Image 1: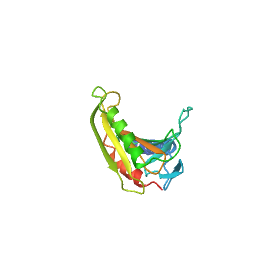
Image 2: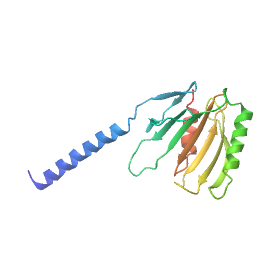
Image 3: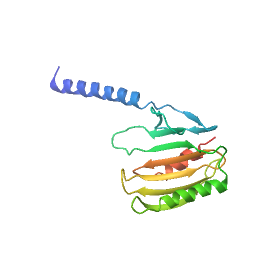
Image 4: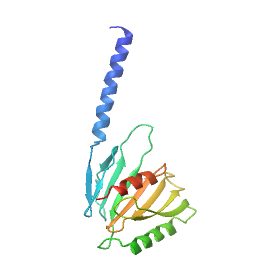
Length: 171
């Protein structure tokens, strides 16, 4: 076996080992759905459901973009609201206003904004900003009218597209 053949063999073995490791650590499934608070959320291709291995004081489900070297991380955490019952348009807009007020702190956030996403079955008032400390991530809080769900999106790149796609998939 020549040196070139040995090099090719090792590259092939390492590539296969990496793909197996990546597939094991990022269990991507096609057409995966998660049930949260009586609402079905479609998990986009390339995203996985993360387990929260520590006990929480609130119920939350986290979706994260599968790890791919060179791609930005991205998460979507789904919280159930503390008070029973779904958000009304009035209560969701009130939560959006409270989040927007919190994002007005210039020591922690910049580029605060509010808007509504409504591409699917449920309208969602949202407030977002760029974090100035920590991961310098873009953060977006959306309150889904007609459900008890709040979505918190975070990534170092813009999250509006991911938010619109995930919120439009709610059933």
